[in-house]
Every structure is written in C-alpha cells, then in structure tokens.
Length: 483
View 1 (cartoon, rainbow, N blue to C red):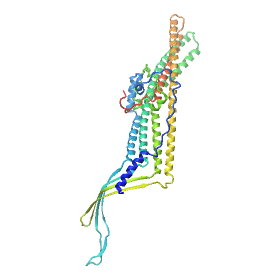
View 2: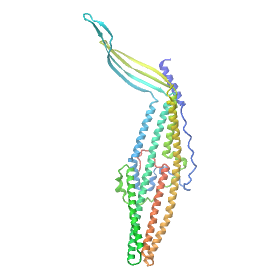
View 3: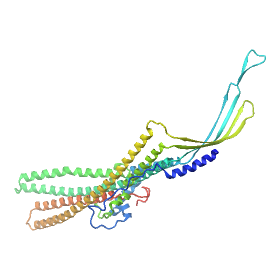
View 4: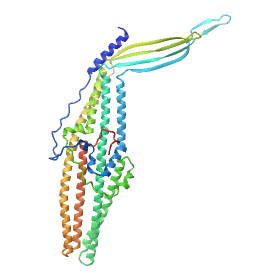
C-alpha cells in the first residue's frame, strides 16, 4: 500500500475508534434530594424566576439598587472571576487544537566549506587544499497529526470545556455572594443607624430623669442612692453610644470596598440615617431538587466532577498506543563553488506508532492520582449539596424566628405606647409624678430598639434565604443590565 493510502486508512480507523472512546469514565450517579423542606412556610405562592434573579428589587430601595449596580460593575472579585472565565475559554481552544493536524512553515540557509582533497600544484614546492564553498537554502511546510485512536485528546478537550463551565459557574457564585453581602451590610447599616437614633432618644430621657432626681433630692423627695444609680446608668449608656456609631462606620467602609471603591467613598452618601425598607421580596418557593440547577456553587462542583472524570479517562489512554502521521514538502537549492545552483522540490510522508513499555510507574501513578481527584471532587459535590440544604433550612428557621419575635415585639411596643400615653394622662391630672412619665418613655424606647433588631434580623434572614437558593446570578455579564 502506498504511503498516502496508508495515511488515509489510518485516519479513517482513528475516527471510528475515537467515536467509541473506550477509556471514557462515567460520572457518579445524580444526588438524591429530599422531597420538600422541613421548615418552609406552609403556604407559599409560586416563585417568579425573574424575581429570583433580581430579588433585591423587592425591597424597593433606590439606594440599595444603586449600590448593587455599582458592585456588579466594579467589584474586584467579579473582575477576577471574569478573567478566569476568559482564561478557561482560551484553554479550551488549546485543548481542542490537539484534535487537528499542526502545520509549520520552515526555512533554513547557510554556507559551509568542506575539505574535498589535497593535490600537488605544478611549479610549487608542496601541496594545496581544495575547499569548495557550498550555499544551501531549504524551505517548505511540515504537518504532523497524532490520531486520537482511543479518545484521549477528545477527553482532554472535554475536561477543558468542563473546567471552563466551572469557571463560569464560579463567576455566577461570586455574583450571588456579592449581592448577599451588599444587601446584608446595607440592611444592617440602616438597622444600626435607626438603633443609634433610638438610643440617643433614650439617653436624652435618662439625662432628663437624672435632672429630675437631682431636683427631687434637693427638695428632699429622693435619696442620694437613687441619684448615684441614675448617674451610673447615664454614664454607662454614654459609653455604649460610640460602639454603635463605630459599627455604622465599619459597615459603610465594607460597602465601599464591595462596590470597588475606597472605604470612605460612601461616607457622605450613607451617613444620613434612613429607615429600614418597608417592603421585602416574597419568600422564594423552590424544591430541594431545584438547588442542583439553581445554585451556582453546585453547578460549579458538578462541572468539576465532569472534568475529573474526563481527566481520568485521558490518563488511562496513556497506556494505549499512539499513531502519528507526518508530511512535509518544500524546495531545496544547492550551489557549490562557481557551478550553477541546483534546485528541486521535495516531499515526505511518514507514520509512526508508539506504545509505552517501561516508565517506572509514571503512567499508573498518574491514573491513580486522577482517580483520587475524581473521588475528591465527587465527595465535594455531595458535601456542597448537603451544605446547600443546610443553608436553606437554617435561613427558613432564622426568618421564621425573627418574624415571630418582631410580631411579639410589635405587640409589646403597642402596649408600651399605651402605658406611656396613660402615664402622661395621669401626670397631667396630678395622679403620677414626672419620673413615672420618663420611665414609661424609656420603656417604650427600649421595646422599639428590640423591635428594630428583630426587623433587621428578619430582612437579613430573607437575604440569606435568597443566597441559599442561589438567587441573583445573571446570564449576561456582571456589568450589564443591572437596573
């Protein structure tokens, strides 16, 4: 059989064999998931997929929307993840290039002298070396193609594609985490600011109570112990106020960094006290099995399993023979001494077969390492799924508990307000003293402070629930369409 016919036959056989890919490894079986959640509310409306992607819109807070838009456009973690996506996409092209022949252009030239012979020169006293000069020039194209007999190159390309998918899902996971961080820090900031305002009102009431006690003491209506105790209470409260203000500053700094800016960049914009959002997104309704498709970290680890399975198959293919076809063609020119140059066109076809015989256990060890890597990522996939289930259940519990506490505190606040109003009415009729009025005000403010904490916790738990469900990742690039 002629060389060209041999090459074509080999290529046909390779295409048939690679279609079977005998070294392919099946990924682990799909994970089993619970039928439903243990702590989800009994009655839930169906979830809107668009609302899950842009859940923060449910707070109806323009400042929060602007912060998230800025974070999606400028956060450094997202920029790093986007660069990794581009890197992984480039490596897919590198891996797929091994499936095709490589063609290189080559050229070379030079001059050399060789001792041809020694002859006697008539009329001289000795001999002379004859050293003709040769100029050589060659050039052409050379092609090489390693036929994928057992699917190794296809599996390596599949592994690279799975790694690229993993990088894309890592970007989505970074978006989910970023949105939750921005919303959580913003809600906590508004809650702390509101707490600070209530604390300052309560501190003013305690100062008024101290003044009243001092006046009563001078009038002989209060003892020194009561005055000293009130002074200690006021001083203790004043010492706690800076800690609240420090918390606000730290939250503003965190939001600045999350939006890709210096920590103090948002100081002027966020220092003014604003209330917590009046509205909130609805509780999402998704089954546990939906997490496998919705949460980016689960999709990422699943892609890592596929990449590891393909990598193990490619490692096993190293034990099998490899067939390489080669071809080259071009021209060559040779000029010796003063003779006319000789030029000719040349070509060559070839094939080679290699198979491992002895490599001191290198290939077997690489297969063992790839097998262990597959076990690692498979276990990590299962662990990530269990952690996702735990995240959702914990978020349901936290949201329910915070709402129950908020509802009870709302009733307590109404009762405290009624007590304050009644005490003031009694004071106006002379049936109660001024200290009682101040105590009723302080009691109302203390309940209000706890109510703000409960409301903040409920909203933050709702954010955690959307993060646990994987809400907030977008198909489009992070910097686009965030309004």
